[in-house]
Image 1 (cartoon, helix red, strand yellow):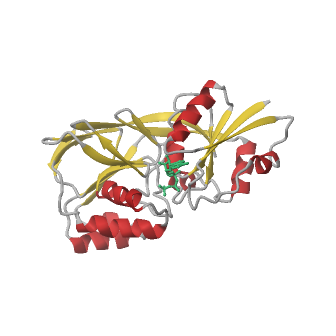
Image 2 (cartoon, rainbow, N blue to C red; image 1 turned 135 degrees about the vertical axis):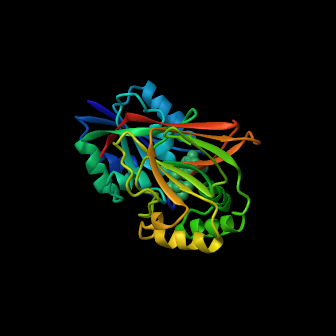
Image 3 (cartoon, rainbow, N blue to C red; image 1 turned 180 degrees about the vertical axis):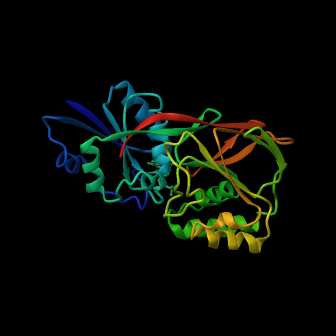
Length: 293
Ligand SMILES: Nc1ncnc2c1ncn2[C@@H]1O[C@H](COP(=O)(O)OP(=O)(O)OP(=O)(O)O)[C@@H](O)[C@H]1O
């Protein structure tokens, strides 16, 4: 008998998913599976629910939501043998898209039933895990403005991007160390990715792989507004790396230090986060998570 726990972000995407126990029971035979449905009631509730599922010895824990929910649930499963299932009902669903998990709920449930697993790498930033990407600079500002808007559509991402562009002149000086080199600079963006998808089929790091044991880094130097617009246009065709001042690297770890500030504004799997430390250390944990995909 397998115990499957489904943790459902009740507000993910448009907040109107139809995942209920009747639907789940129509997929999973009662003689083989016991099912537990755990809807979230507040922000970050999925962490508590997933921690309880680990203690309750679930055989599979399924995150039903977007990259934020996946982060909360998967963080509790890192370095355990419990596989993560994913039902992508969020707005962006970058990780699910990289793993080719269908957006159609019935097809995603079929995949969970088949129970084919793979091990994927996990990013770690100080004590936080990330599965898709993290970043400082412009993308963190976009996420901060997106979260403040309280809307969850591609339109609100576009509005948040325009708002962030207006503030993009205030760049912070940092010292960035990776692959034995240290750069002192004021970057527009440092984007660090495990996955090759941002969501909405967009990518800043198209060559990233979830299984290569490496982080893909994109550093964008201070650039003019016109060049930022060109960068975004080229990004639609995954050709933004042809621009001067846009550099791509691969590494196993990267340290970013701020000289005069003790507060980092970052985005981690699409959630805004304040880190109250003068430096952040980002590493890759090879094959530290089992996923059904
Ligand atoms: N019941 C709830 N009430 C309020 N917030 C919640 C609830 N359940 C989960 N959340 C929060 O919703 C946020 C977004 O989750 P997630 O990324 O899974 O969905 P999404 O629709 O893809 O959102 P986003 O557009 O932000 O990517 C997370 O910060 C999570 O903690």
